[in-house]
Length: 136
Ligand code: ATP
Image (cartoon, rainbow, N blue to C red; front, side, top):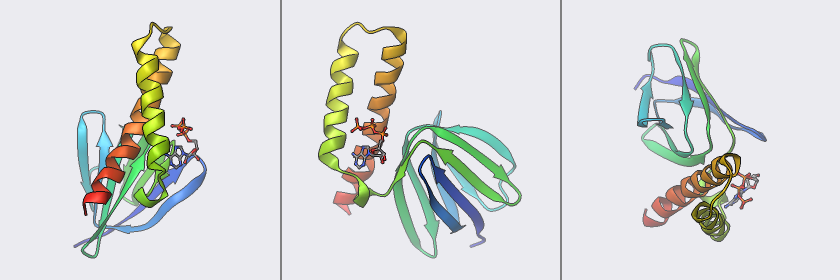
């Protein structure tokens, strides 16, 4: 299968830089797939699960909110965080989820509400990839 260059850059590190045959990323309206020769575009990435396929293998990772740029030279994702399942502390993510849910139950300011929603999305993204990894 034809490959393209994928770069996933998180706030604190270059998470992945290499060849990719198929990328599936969390978009605003659900999962979106990218293969070589995809039309150029810039779009939002939502916190969730990212998967990249190469040589019959697939790697899954949790990513935070960000942007994706697709050009004829390849694909760049800039995101808040990117973590492989084995890097994720499940208990920590469960606690972060519970904290965010508790905060969302009380009346918060708009700013606090957005903050809690974002924290919940990050925790859910982490838990999603770890729960899938456990099943494999
Ligand atoms: P928490 O409230 O647990 O800190 P958070 O969503 O606010 O979670 P982030 O701001 O996204 O955390 O990340 C801060 C740092 O902590 C980053 O380096 C991130 O990789 C790390 N981190 C956050 N949650 C986890 C986790 N569950 N497992 C491993 N590392 C984590």
